Length: 186
Image (tube, rainbow, N blue to C red):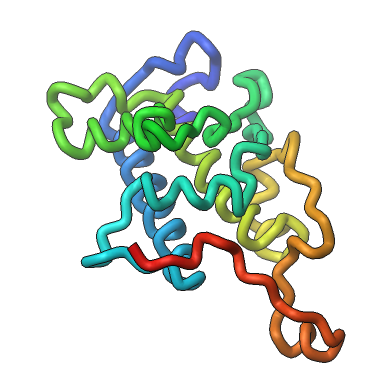
């Protein structure tokens, strides 16, 4: 996308089919990741139909609104904190880039202008933030593949008791696991 469109503030409203595909692919991955996190934590939804109402529960657990990242080669376009305005009373619309994804997906002709660079960059930033929130950035995958594209400007400071520790290590340390409170069936 940014090989063809100059990454500048003036071009953030530029839209097109390739940009639409980036938004759809990144948001589909985000849906899949959020659903998997909830399911892995025993948060089950009737008929397996997860929505942003369910995904919103991850905002606090993963502290998604505390992340701010940039694109390493294009720092001039600023930083992105795509979950910072996420609200429970309008969980889809308050994520403007995710709302754009839904509009593009359901009525491309009327909403094609939402397939723009700004929404694509925010959806890519959201995808990267979810990866960081789950796996951290001090690992070989981040170092080898992601670090060259993204720069982390701000991330949450976690307390030791907030970290995930595998059961075999937890048991050897004689520690008790604490379940996060969104483990409910809806």
